[in-house]
Amino acid sequence: MLRTIWSGAISFGLVTVPIHVASATETRSIQFHQYHLEDMGRVRVRKVCDLEDREVTESEIGKGYEVSKDNVIPISDAELSNLPLPTAKAIEIQAFVPLDSIDPIQIGEGYYLVPDGQVAAKPYKLLRQALGRSSKVAIAKYAWSGRERLGLLRVREDVIVLHAMRWPDEVRDPAAVDPPTAQVSDEEIDGALALIDRLTRDNLDGPEFQDAYTGALAKVIEAKREDRALPEMPEPAEQPGQVLDLMAALTESVSKAKASRGEAADVHDMPKKTAKKQPAKKTTAKKATARKSKSA
Image (cartoon, rainbow, N blue to C red; front, side, top):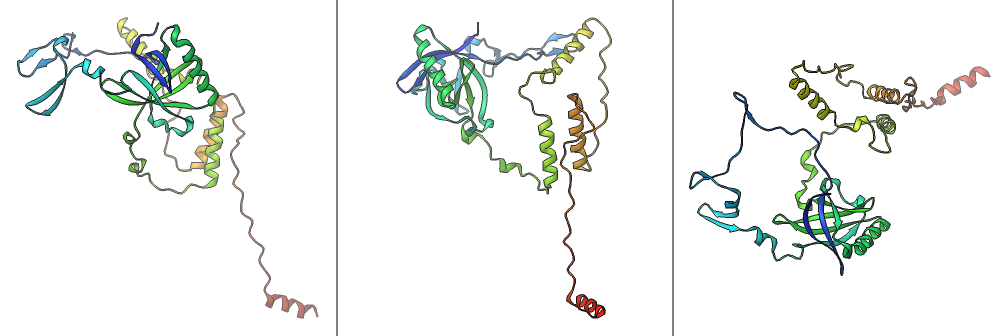
């Protein structure tokens, strides 16, 4: 059973859908703690009051807003839960838009919305099927952890998923990157498209999409626990060098992609560079007249 992290309702016009929110993702990576290397004692972070110079318990800790160094306004969790906002207890749908109109850079963590009891079953299914048939996503506002947020609701199989979103003014202007200018030929673009075509997949199923880092780390931990030699890093097949000929690099990349799929690696689907035909030189009037005189 998924752990509930928030309870409220989806507000869809005059339709209300009571829901629980549960995280849709989980972390599978290996976690480390900090230790004192001399005696391997656990190093912990302790919370100490600056004024009393003593460690305080969680029950003594609360939130506060610093107006100045000597003026701090305490804010309780109860006050945050009862903010004068319509989104404090509900995920309010504001609009419906095509998914491709949303820049992926705005989309964050995903959460499953679980219908709360039998009373929510029918309106939940109504919204889920309406979203699916419309081929659109819902944009909503909700308030969690002391701030109002923007969210995206979409359908994943039979479940409604809420994605946290960044506000538009939180996304930096890409002009700040100032990318370098360079000339790229049509042949090079066609070569890159050929490589994209060879690397295109229908899904992300396969060993290349598994977390190899966590597996390698687990082997290191197991070897150290059993006092065995650490596994050695495999040597790369070849050292990547500096790309001097972009077309040659693209051609070789397409060849390797085909070979990895068991296709003939010696046949390239790269566009061939055709030489431009030179227009025939026109015979000058002077030469033509000379030929006529000689013929006569």
